[in-house]
Figure 1 (cartoon, rainbow, N blue to C red):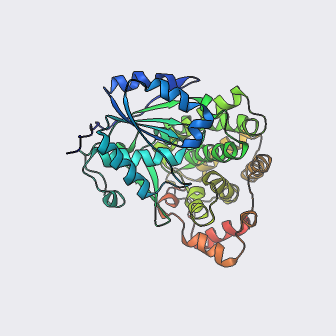
Figure 2 (tube, rainbow, N blue to C red; figure 1 turned 135 degrees about the vertical axis):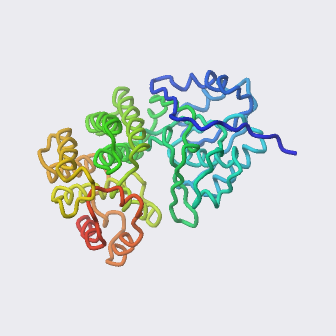
Figure 3 (tube, rainbow, N blue to C red; figure 1 turned 60 degrees about the vertical axis):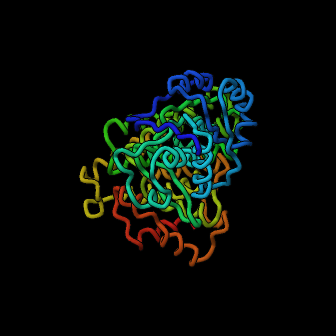
Length: 389
């Protein structure tokens, strides 16, 4: 008979530490959980290149550990089920996830599967029961982008189609955000993950579901990313790395409240079908969406706070880029993307045909689109796609 995993009451919020050396607090958090049997879910390259491997070996030396690794570019249902099985077999008291968004999302779903009676297939369509739990999860990001270490949602792909699992049980118990683990990130990954953080902050500000608190987090994330992203990509130093780690975490906190909007809704198919990094895919759609929002009117505004409120958020973002209008903001973001080596046109990533454009519109994520403040029918989505052809 396999040992039982230890369930965890759902956390109301992730307890986070954002600082150089934050990883060293890992034993203290494991002690707080009384965790002696630990499943480590890691990105092998990321932990080796960041120096986390040696530190983890030392920090976990007095515990029974099992390592799960070997993941692809997207988090899959197969991986989540495999990791959950390993947690059950170990009788894990806690899961420690070290890596980028893919590893964190896999670990988040696996923690729920291992600590509750939920089946993977039901997670895709049925909300978790109030008494469902999860194995306590400590999330340690090695990129500065997704903010997945503090959100109650996780992305998973099944048969190359994206699904989002959203529940309070998915939220990690602790997050240790150590910017030192990002020092070895190459420029392309720094750019892609940093653009993801930037776009999440922007979308969270104008999201229909935004609150005063979420906008404060999003605005601070935006300030940091707008100031430090280009330097983090082209001439990284400790200050820029620390700023981007904080920006990503704050943007994650913001979207945990608001979720994302049209740029994310349009982006997923690019990653599914064309293999484009999620951050680059989201960034591609952000300028044309902003330009369209610049023409927002009472007739197509679906935010009950009205078009003036939405325009205020856009101008708030524009000010961080030295712009005075939505179009000026869109131009500034495209300039930043080009400086960071990100694609700004679909043809750069092999999306050429009208059929490809139609496919992108056909696979838009309706749930994310419903959170966007501007009504976007199929014809409008087609215009957005054509604008960056």
